[in-house]
Amino acid sequence: MATVSDLTQRRCYSPAALGIAPTSPSANRHFSVAATNDILQHCAAKLSSANGTMTLDIRVFEPEHHAQARGLWESTEGVGLSEADSFENMRRFLERNPGLSFVATDKQLIVATILCGHDGRRGLIHHLAVASSHRRRGLGRALVRRALSALHQEGIQKCHLLVFNGNVSGRAFWDRIGAEERTALGIFSLLT
Image (tube, rainbow, N blue to C red; front, top):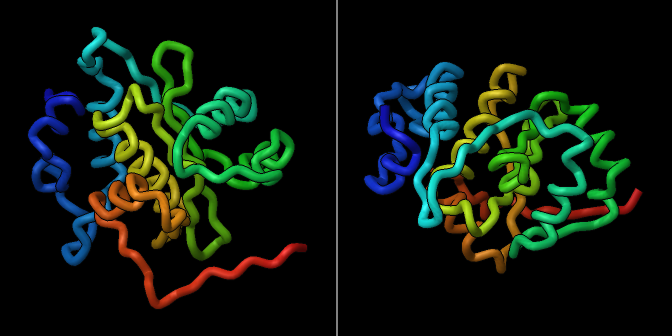
């Protein structure tokens, strides 16, 4: 079985390259639950790094992960934080969207996060962040696939995400994995 490290070195990211059939013939970026589990098994394997071997574990984001996650977000370029990211607000978000957000740990240290929720029609991804020491190994892709699979299981067929225009590396990541930039739409905000 190939590891994520093997796959990233060969740039094998498409479902066909992973031996996985997309759930829709017209959309190469829609993965079945079984396909996502196969990819996560690859990601949970021991990955080689310049400093030795690390063991990654992807699990549901729980409120007790907040402090470490907040530290990762604060140190990650392109992540914007506000009062919405306080412990209490995050606890409510996770309670409202159970099983949709995830963390990845190396030993007991959180090295990646994805926050995901939905309004009953569309999903929304926030705070996909991977520690610089753990990038370029497929971990971000694995978290996205896990979140999309969880949304799919809840009957959500499309997910949106927000990226700052100046976040060059974040925009490049989303482009590489096939996210469509919606230039015909604008986003507006109001205080409640």
